[in-house]
Structure formats: structure tokens, C-alpha cells
Image (cartoon, rainbow over all chains, first blue to last red; front, side, top):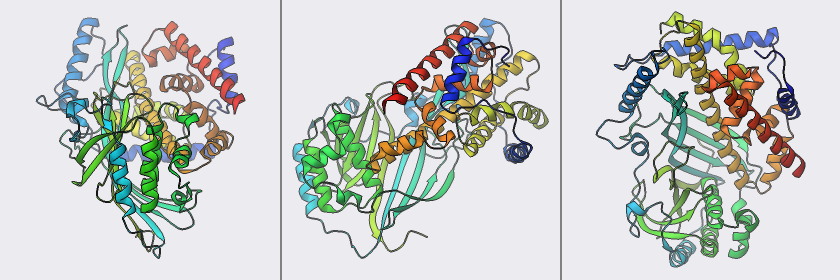
Length: 371
Length: 167
């Protein structure tokens, strides 16, 4: 590979050395044997799967057939792959692969993601009151259980080439949604066990795709136990005063222009891991009322069919909006959605598009950390 | 591609791809990313390369696919780190400890500060590819590849200088 490094290469090598990034070395015999065994196992598993059936389109895209003909081939392959992903009668692939936008009473669907909402002050006050009226969870049950369901997006480069402006071959980004079901158990000592199942990428109709995936996302399950490093009652240790609570969760030094987003990010994280007391939930809503930029989109029905009020804040990074859904009768957090509001090269979705959502199915206390 | 042809490609490309992935991920994740890359290639009805040019383009495709898997892994780690930052009151200290902990974690920390494109170029350089070979993989001219490498170097230097001496 490299012959004789020039000054620039030597400087880059020195920089990489300074961060501990070493050049790959020939592995030791023992390591080589381990690598070989792993590689052989992987190869056997890969070739045990069925390769994709041949497509009608020209497939040998790397054959040089002249610039004009190559462009035709590339476009033909791209067209076929697009059709494989999305039927021709459907909207563009990127838009079709995302979950449908929820309908909100206070805003037209076409305006969702345009960061237009009305003041959420009254809604937040109502949520706080509703939360305060709820009974506290049974303290005799030691384990906090949170069950969630959601779709997360993932983006990869497609193997389909397309010509760049300079004639180079590039590959389009392809984004798919991955369904995730996650149950976490938080023990009194702060240890958390998570049981997570990732589904296969979803087709445009919302069902698992049976098309051989080029995205490397496969159904999987995991069972992990780790220490959170935090007390199990972490939310209850936060300040009760709404102003101090807001300052704690969304400090202005980090969130000067996006305090609403910072608070919502914290809030969704906390409710994804902890069973929060109704009193603390009420204080969360009162803190949210103090954060600039939080609006309401009105009422809606969430992904699980529950009545909800929707609260929105422009997200960081710019170009996204986070929507928190809450139960108007109990004040409980029901979940959240992230909406892509502007084109972002990190995604192959057409805005506005829901790029992730999480629905909290259950948040309760149980006797033990799962099966 | 027939199975025996695929196996030839597999054993030809595997060491380089694993080295590329290992430069950016821990060992298990690197193996997973490489396996996912070959699974993608296997499931695409690609033709066996019949000449050097076709072989180079297949190599370029493999690195692009692997780059996507590595990027996804970094994105996944970013999500987890963000969660830790939010869940743990002294998240900054945890991130800081990652930066100064074992070498592999430290490398991932610094590489994670780079853009996907810069990280890709640096990983190719670290594997040992010349600028001419990078140009083949990146699908650009040699001068353009050199510029990309120099830009990535400049950004890494800036990050190390400002972040490394700052906190």
C-alpha cells in the first residue's frame, strides 16, 4: 500500500498515534487463529442464507460500457431497486417508510413539523393538576418496570450506485424504520436489566420486510444487566421547585436557545427508565411551563390508541421537532415522537417525517426483575 | 456470484475490511460489521469480478457498505452516550473517563468527534491505503482524495488541540 510517506502523511500518522490509533499489525498466531475461526463461522452462516434472486435489471454495474451506457444502466438499476422497496403507486420511498404522522387537533397535518403551535401553559397546568391527583405507586414492590414500544430509524448507504456530478460512483443513503420492544427493570441498588427485541426493517405497509435487506438490520434480542450509576429513586432526588428543576434538567449554559428541547430530552429519558411519582411528574410539567419554546399541538390518539395531549419543542440539532405525548386525565407521560422538519443529509427521509417514536406501554412497580 | 466465487472474494477482502473496522470499533463489533457487510454483498446478486478494474470496484463497494455499518454503530453509541449523559448527573465525567480509559475506547471517542466522511478517510489511511487507492475506493480523483485526507487531518488536529487541551 503506502510506499514512502510524505510530511502530510507523517503528521497524520503522528496525530493518530497521539490518540492511540495504531496501524493494523499482523496478528499473532493465536489471534490469527481466533480471527480465522470467527471468519469461517461467519462465512458459513452467510452462505447458508439464500442470495437474492436475480433481478430483471442489468446487475453488472461495474462493467465499463461507456459513460452514456453506464449512466443508463445505473439509472435502470436504481429504478428497479426503488420499485423493490416501494410499489410504484406509493409515495417516494423515504416518505413511505416512516410511520404515518399522528393527527393533532390543534394543527393541520401539513403544518406538523413547521414548529407552529400554541402556548402550552394551560395544558401544562392541567397536566400538573391531573398528575397530583393520582395515587403513588406501591412502594412495597421494589423493582421499577418500564415497557416501551417504538420505531427507530437507521440509515445506511445503499449498494445501488449512482453517478455523481464528476462522474464518480456514489451510493444513495437508504433509511429504514426498525421496530423495538424494550422492557427495563430497575432494581433498588440502581442495577438495570433490559430485555430488548429489534424487529426486521419494515416495509411501507408497516409489516416486517421479507425482501433481503441491504441494510444489515436483522431481528435480534438482547438481555443486558448493568449498573446505571445512579440511585433507583433518581427522579425523586431532583429539586422540587419547578425553576430549580428546570435549571437542573436544562441548564441555560448548555441549552440557551433550546431549553424546551433539553427538558423534553431529559424528561423522555427519565420516563424511559424510572417509574416517576405523580408529585414529581406534576413538578416536571410545571418546570416545562417555565421553559421557552414549548407549544401544544392539541389532542391526538397515540400509536397505542390512547387519548393524549401533544407538546412540542424545536429540537437540537435544528431541523427536528420533539413531541411529547401525555395522558390528559392522569398527567402521565405516554411517549414521544421525533419529527424531521428539514432535509438532513443524515437521513434519507423526506420531511416532514416521523423518524422515531416511543410509546410507554407500562410504567409500574413489580416484585422481581422479569422472567 | 456462485458460492465458491463468493468465498474467494470473502477471503481476499476479509483481512483488509477487518483491519478497517478494528481501527474504529472494538473487536466484537468489528467482526459483526464485517460479517454484516459480506451478508449484504452475498444477498446482492453481484457478478464475480472478471478483471482488475471490476475487482477494485467491488473492493470499493465493500468498503462503502462497511462504512455504513460502522457509521450506524457510531450513531448507536452516540444515542447510548446521550442517554448516559441524561441519566447520570456527572455524565461529562463519564465521557471524560472514556476518553482517558483504555486505548480502544479513547480512539473511538476521538473518531466519534469526526464526521462520517472524515472518519472513513482516516480509517482508510490507517489501514495503509495510498492516496491513489483511496481515490479508487472513494470514487474520486487522486487530488480530490488527497484534499479529503488533508481536510480530515486538519479537523482531527483541531479537535485534538481544542478538546484535548480544553477540558
